[in-house]
Length: 142
Length: 142
DNA sequence: GTACCAATTTGTAATGATTACAATGTTGTA
DNA sequence: TACAACATTGTAATCATTACAAATTGGTAC
Image 1 (cartoon, rainbow over the protein chains, first blue to last red):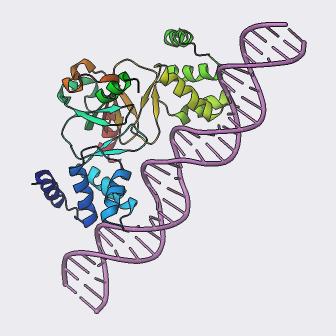
Image 2 (tube, rainbow over the protein chains, first blue to last red; image 1 turned 90 degrees about the vertical axis):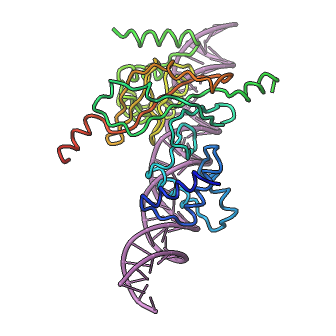
């Protein structure tokens, strides 16, 4: 039913990270909402169910998940966004509506001799522009 | 002697952007210092020659240059960094010393059908990890 | 040279995401 | 039950960036 969610829970157990209620809820939100949410989006949504939730906890949890390699960070806008999908893919950021679209890439193609003897921990590809939907709306004179 | 600098000045003239003393100095700093400087680095350096310089002016000028397409933004750290080199290349950010290294890439290899009918204005590739120098120092037990 | 307008610069204040920190609460264990 | 380690919470601080209004500059027409 929620295979990824359960896999992640096991992964956390393997890394000796305690699975508190709040942490599980953040993880659950990320697996259910693949919109690359901000801290505020996660906090606002979860706060309805968990009135005592603190935004600091959301920050702490995300930091933990990122350090554990279970979540990736998306930078470039005013608010940091978070992605539960750690498989190789690029992000297209729409400069008009702010939506982030995933697209497939083969990072191996970027292998580079300039970086011999460098330890590469992370690779990110960002495209920016106007998404299909916003282009269509603009055409309508909006 | 300063071919790139002169080219950029002409480019600005072509775009009807006035070349004030402050703007030229920022441009000059960027062409002379290819370390992908922060606003603060630019401000601090120029402030010695131009004691009246305001940090706001540095921000304004960089915004202008970025919008004109003459400078590219590098995100991902606490402070935004700026790059006068607008040719295709990737950035390796050292998580230890903070240095940014350029490396060559062929962005055409990332062409992607997932983004058909999207208007792509900008492509960025960031690698993160530990640079050669920091790896060497770590080996020495530093 | 002077008057005028627009563009530019400047400094200060506001914004807002993120972090630091200390107090409180929770959990598991002997 | 007692204790220690870990989590959570809320508030306050940080700090890069932006907003804004006043002062300055530069060019143009007279």
